[in-house]
Length: 286
Image (cartoon, one colour):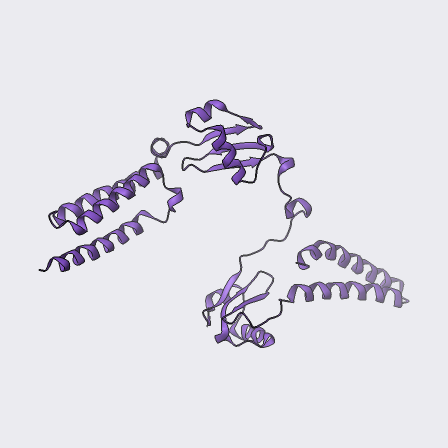
């Protein structure tokens, strides 16, 4: 067998094997690997590269070495899932760096972390004063997570509006010009509804690169030709206008009727619609 052909067969076999191993190891991103897992990955790659090029190394011996190095982290992760003490020993524990706005110097020394490095990590989180931090912890993978003090935390919708309506994730209903039926069914919609919405925009399905439907039923489009202008979704604005019209109609009916009971009924419903309008208007304006 020619040398180049043997190298090619070895390389292709090793690539397939490494792909299978990565699937077994899971989907943990590179930034979340522990230092030990990172070293194992480098070692496996070095063994695989050497094995594919050095024909003097037995393929069976090389594969055995790769399997041992690759399956060891799988074994440790399985044991870690079942045993907390073993997990702490292998992956380590989180370390508190800041508590109640005060830096814990001893913990910094134990993790060989300088104050400059701590301040740098805080700046990456858009925090420039240590006193603004209620709690900061260094995770086993090296990430620094912080909790700002209550008065320094950004305002959220829940702080302004109690019990805000839940919002579901948008569903992709068209991708690469093809209709996706499962996301449509998840939203309780049909192909007929989708084609009707596209007709309103004057767009053909084959011209749509991506289309998504949000929890309000609004369809947003991204076309292959970005020069084509399409109008913004109007569903929320139309709903807001309809609520305002109903509220105004109740007030008008209350003024026009001569019946005392009807007047009270219309006024009561007008007040209910006004209350509803105050709750939903901030969400429907955006």
